[in-house]
Length: 161
Image (cartoon, rainbow, N blue to C red; front, side, top):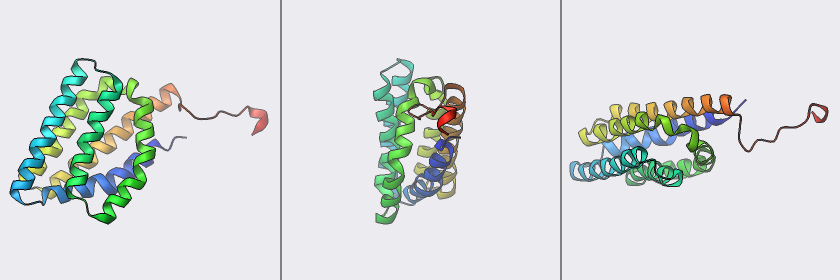
């Protein structure tokens, strides 16, 4: 059994979802600048995916997209929660990015939905879009783990269990 689904789902419900909603509630000028920055990062992410850019760059752009709206809108408690969940979810993303490459167009579309909702100031839509992105990522990741096995996991011989 893998913990990827619960880890990423918790992150979406707790930090990503809440931060996206807070970002959508920013004043118009801040929201507009944030949405512009998110779209710029997402365009770079899409271009990098199409160009078969190195996995590290793709991971960095995806991370930057999410960190941008979290840092722009989250308060101290939400930042602490986000920070506590980040290491494990990033570990999974780093380990499996190579086999998730074919799904990057879906991530690009999900990122655009987040940016669009923030730009419109629609808190509920921003929260739903962020949650959809993280839940979809967790599902994609869980499928890969089932197929490829859990990388980095220690498999004990039956006699040792």
